[in-house]
Image (cartoon, rainbow, N blue to C red):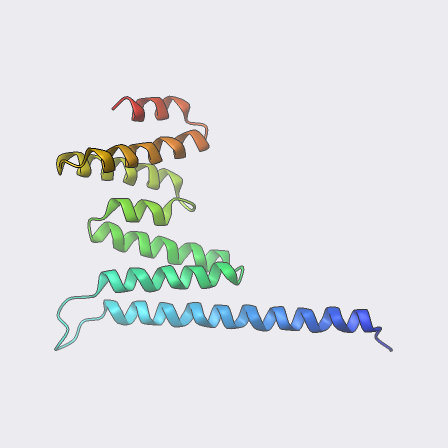
Length: 151
């Protein structure tokens, strides 16, 4: 069976895309390995490097998203967000889970606003409550958005 030049080009392009996707998934898996390494403790490393692990999870999520492996990207974003919560950084945690879990992001932005208010940072508090309200409007929760803005 003879293959036309255009069919051959399509097959070649498909193979290149698959190879590129495989390379991006491999990159993502390497970043997951590095994140796990950051979280391990040893005789000379007593505390896990949560900040480094969160950064590696974000890099993994980006690689998976570029490879169109959305489930793996979502899981990596959630792990990065969980680490940010553990490090008591609700603003960064909210940014990481915003696309995958908007309800959780709204809660975290609200918490970040409260923390900023207590710490005497009214501008950051207003920014966080604004982000929560925008997410609520985006998800058709108009009454909740009004309540958030009236805080």
